[in-house]
Length: 304
Image (tube, rainbow, N blue to C red; front, top):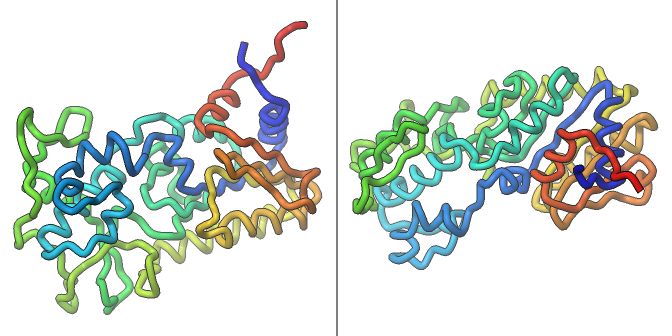
């Protein structure tokens, strides 16, 4: 029988009774799904960059001052492809979707890998606050449109020697070595001003909040406003301390204002809540993927 803790049982009950569920997701949810930025995934796709420049993980490489834009986009096209266009190694997001199936839910996330949408969540119930690996924008920016980058990213991967496999992943042929540059003609430039394009990621004040971003923000605010006072489950998954003002602190405040609300925090090492909402809170310190598996099952305690 599954070993279900009292907190997991409480969460299952809260989920069953909730009239609305607000999911707030951070980076550790994708980590639980296998989107790690170091280790085997990094070695598979970036061993050449690690050897040449001493880069130790994908995140650090994203800030490296590559000498040419051809090399910059060789690195970033790999980065974008494996974290945006390849599926997560573990079905954590799919399990989460099944758990809220039939529920009135909305998702706010600081993740930029679009795992929610790939797992089948309703696009109209998603708000990606920090951007999307799958979009380009003008680096200036001279205007506030974004552009789908999948076709050009795939061309960049192919130009480096990667070939698409039947499962949608891309890999080098056996014994092959990747080129560390992309052809100059593949470099992306703004169609209006001609400046270089960049990723639509919130790194500074040049981040473009396009029409889609504002529409999603409005849908999220409307969801919160129209469900105020209901039995709401604020389900926080893998949110750290980098941007607590986007998900964590608002969830705490909304829980404190609504006596019928429940705040649940699932995080490996950082499952905490303020004293003011302890009676309404469920904090589970552990692997998010394993907790979701427990929630899928019937939490029956072993007979004594």
